[in-house]
Length: 42
Image 1 (cartoon, one colour):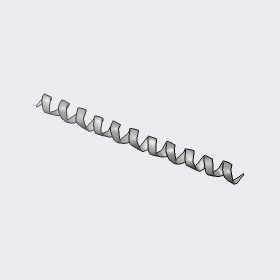
Image 2 (cartoon, one colour):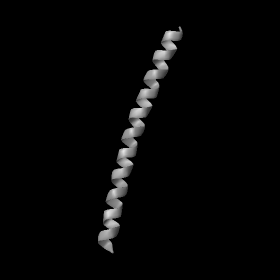
Image 3 (cartoon, rainbow, N blue to C red):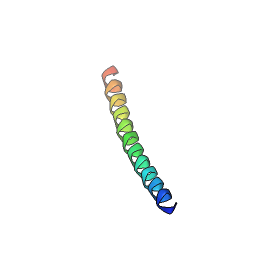
Image 4 (spheres, rainbow, N blue to C red):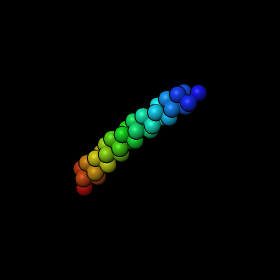
């Protein structure tokens, strides 16, 4: 039972880290697009 809980925690941590990485990349991409569009409109 303890091994199952430990494995579940490890998988959960990996998913959280992957999610954070994707969010950071998407956030940087959105900022980059926003500034490039804003500058081109000026």
